[in-house]
Amino acid sequence: MRFRALALLSFAAALIAAGPATAQPYPSRPVTLIVPQAAGGTNDIVGRLVGQKLGEVMNASVVVDNRPGAGGNIGTQLVAKGPKDGYTLLMTISSSQAINPALYKNAGFDPVQDFKPVGLIGAVPNVLLVNPSFPAKDFNEFLKLAREKGANYQYASAGNGTLNHLLGEMLNSMAGISLQHVPYKGVAPALNDVLGGQLPIVFASLPSALSHIKAGKLRALAVSGDKRSPVLPDVPTI
Image 1: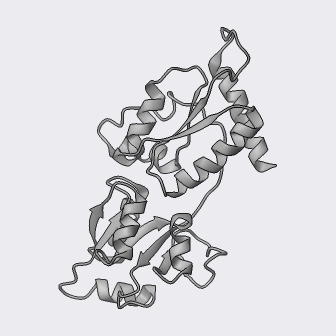
Image 2: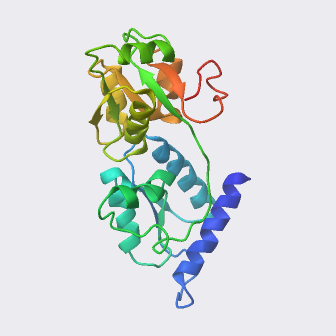
Image 3: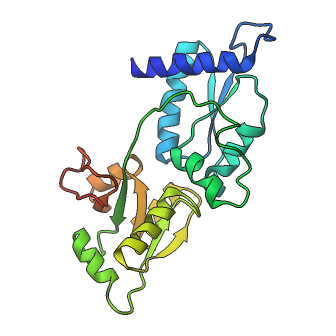
């Protein structure tokens, strides 16, 4: 029912965007759902679920198109500058809309003027993860190691300016440590390198990493937010 409500709301917004000049019933051709993040991340996973349900409710083909890069700016710019005909929708995350215009000198879009919000789909925590070979078994041990003289630990993220990147910088500032940032082109390659031991630490959205945590391939030390995640009840919050 939640998916159906979302789909109908998206459908109505698309009709408004198409305007009264539309000669054929909407939709008369495939609808593109732009995901400005790489495949394998939470926004991609959710976008494909939403795209499938939208297609069922609208009785139309909905094509998910990943356009990653620049912290979500590339795909977001594509939608902002594209035709306002109701056939291109943006599946975005709050950080791209709220942070990027302040973080980049020219994000290439206006988060208020260029878009009409359709609906909030969900909220997920991010999680601080380490390779199982990392010596810290919990968050307190992690901080102790990171504060040692000469400590030089690197952390992976989904890219410069992404929420994963900024979480690491927030932790550096609040905890008085100096984790070194290593950007990747999406959360999937970042996770792969931490899984392979090339880097010890990564920040990632919980859905994109949960299977690795459950399989014991990554160790979760903390989750973002003010409440523990029900799927990781033993992992503290930061």
